Length: 82
Image 1 (cartoon, rainbow, N blue to C red):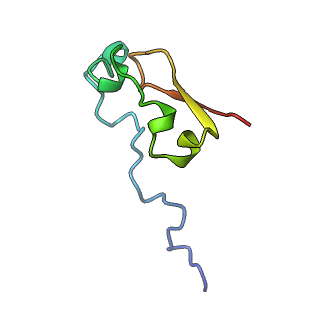
Image 2: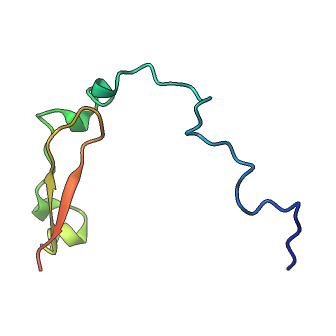
Image 3: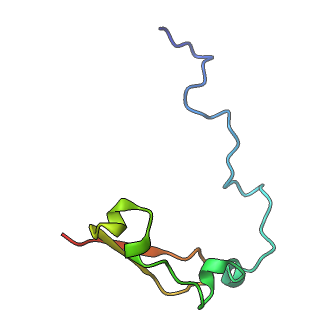
């Protein structure tokens, strides 16, 4: 297969979603995720023993909800138990 100068294999023809000319968000950064169900104090993960994921139900890994930061999605720490 030969590539010619006219072939676009770098993806440069696609639009850059991070460009300054893009739409700016009207939601303040500090409250962008405040309405997410995962960022509520009442949100709890199901116990690892009841998880449908084998790695948690078999005790190979544990998961812990990290503290709420309304400027980003809630994160989960996954740790190997071995």
